[in-house]
Amino acid sequence: MTSEQPRHIIVIGAGIVGASLAYHLAARGARVSVVEAGDIASGVTATSFAWINTSCAGPDPIAALRGGAIAAYRRLEAQVPGLHVRWHGALSYGTQDGRTSPQSRLIDRTRIAQLEPQLRQAPQQAVHEPEQGALDAVAATHALLAAARALGATVLTRTPVQEFAVSGTRVTGVETAAGVIAADVVVLAAGTGTASLAAQLGASLPIHASPAIFLRYQAPPGLVRGIISSHAMEVRQAEDGTLLAAEDYVDDAPDHQPAAMARRTASAIRAELEGAEAIAPDFAAIGLRPMPVDGVPVIGFLPQVEGVYACVMHPGVVLAAIVGQLASGEIVDGQPASALQACRPARFLA
Image (cartoon, rainbow, N blue to C red; front, side, top):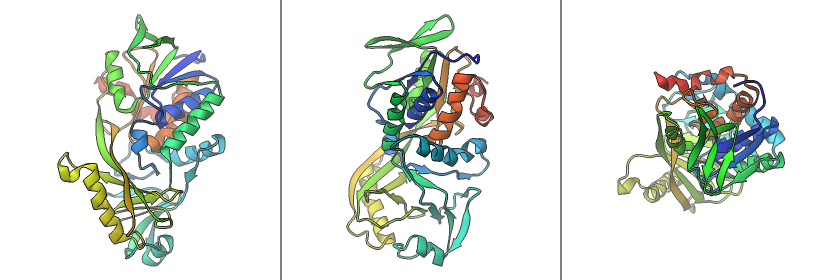
């Protein structure tokens, strides 16, 4: 890439990562078109627990990137109307996964009971991370795209990409049922669909769909003040009182299907929280997270073909704000971001 500003950038994918890219690119003065095969936030964004944190278990090759996630969301809150994060902090105990962040504090039972008074039996100790929060990922995606539109971006939904327009070794646009859309740069931000899009261009991106279960319950207000992550449950409560929970996907056995998991998780929540007796399952689904084979995001220009930038990762919601900020600078200004160095697609060529 040169430092010359691209005339037109297509972002494939209207989840929260694509929406963040669209907004940041448009804010830098680029002409942006978002092309989405389904509807806005209709993929894994809609089934995300959306816990904004910087925690990591063990060595972290993207520590610099993850470390900027919270500050990037705070900037977006000030810039984007309708984008709100609830910075209510998180409590973790009994999970034994070793996750920590620089802001982690070990607190005792008295303080735990103050933070989460509905816990039936507060643990002796917990890790408290007061700077963490959560958001409504679907609402945030719509807010980002509305802000991008206000800056001149266009958003085309239910418009799958059929093929790429290619001239020599350079991609010059995308072909859809409505015709060819020309572009100077095409950004692949289609979650689990990114690998198949890259494959059309002869690029192999080893990304698999990692399932997780997302649950939503009707619940009385005031059950959970922040985020609770324990051996028994991972829960938070939205502003409208909806109780949200996340569970690991085990297998496709009947007892591990979303509806069965929703019933079991409800029992666990009732056992842990005073006042939770009346919670009722409202929604249960499997979300397919795009997981690179080495666990590290795939962000950068494809080395096999000119004019294509890949942007796919887990955790996508956590990193959407900071990645949108940094990747847009690379695409528009041609200035590499050091925090993205470990994420380059070229690492898979070996």
